[in-house]
View 1 (cartoon, helix red, strand yellow):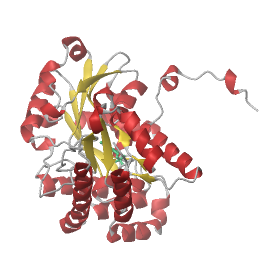
View 2: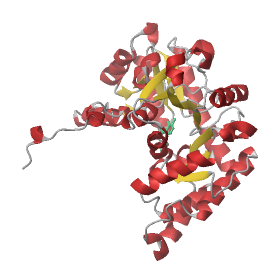
View 3: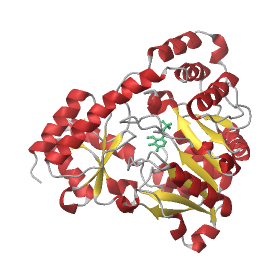
Amino acid sequence: MTDASRIRFADRISNLPPYLFAELDKLRDRKRAEGVDVISLGIGDPDLPTPDPVIAALERAARDPANHRYPEYYGLDELREAIAAWYARRFEVTLDPATEIVPLIGSKEGIAHLPLALVDPGDTVLMTDPGYPVYAIGAALAGGRAHSLPLTAARGWLPDLEAIPSDALAQAQLLWLCYPGNPTAAVAPFEFFETAVAFARAHNLVLAQDAAYSEVVFDGYRCRSILEIPEARDVTVEFHSVSKTYNMTGWRVGWMAGNAQVVEALGRVKTNVDSGIFQAVQHAAVAALDVEQEWVDARNARLQDRRDRVVQALRRRGLEPEVPKASLYLWSPTPGGASSVDFASRLIDEAGVIVTPGVGFGAAGEGYFRVSLTTPDDRLDEALARIDALSF
Ligand SMILES: Cc1ncc(COP(=O)(O)O)c(C=O)c1O
């Protein structure tokens, strides 16, 4: 047997924090093993089914031996063309499927790998705080330094780009945005995207907008793509995936679209480290991108109903969550300004309900917690009833 103490791990892994959501899964499993009937509102992972035509397409494609071989390195032409057709239909944005789109094994994979294409050791990556943890993890894996842009409710959870210190800006290679936001569920006015593109162009930054939640919208809201801005393509890429749009988190298909040089560079990293997405799954993603808008609208109506139930339940307890126009989340202040970890711990210990403490998304998330809307209705109601019965 190997003596584990003799293994020296790289600083890059020794300094890597445990992944927030893997830790939440462990907590859930530990509590269940103790016999607690745990309800997790912690992770944004749709419980509702994938559309039938997608499953039928997978079944057909899985029977074709051509799809059992290594996939095409840059993704099937059909998939890149389907992504381009979706952008044209949805945003009236024209993308060249050959040079401006790279399929990903879920957008998380590309988000984690993009810094390998852009960031040298010592370079800075600008990202919002609170934010999706993978922006900082990708920066760290590339040897870069994360510089956080604190978000506040007062600014509508939009970063103040002019407040970035000049030394951080001088070293910066990459700026991450995420709207609709995780965890804040905030949406960005289109003018903010215009400001961000102008800022990135002025400071020679690559601007990466993570649009994972752009199709999960409520009250008739419609998100726009940052690539609708004519000059955006000089410096901008947008990440997207079928995960949240079509209830397909487990299928692992996403993409990055936009600036052709950045697409080429991420593609070069990827062809050297992975061999693409199972082709049968790519055919299924093509079918997903053809699913009618009515399906998406009906699914969103169900999530909106859950959103309203959570908002009502929290308001009954004197909390004032923001009412989101988009995303799978509610972002709420903790009662009486309690620490987010203390409040989340109380919920799990006294109610068996998991929510995500805001500080898990960065220091500026302190004093908030995130509730995900991806729990079946009856379990969501049960969780809300248990929260209702707690004294705080
Ligand atoms: C903001 C954001 N971006 C990207 C992802 C990754 O999604 P996927 O890899 O399933 O496309 C997530 C997943 O939760 C997310 O919240």
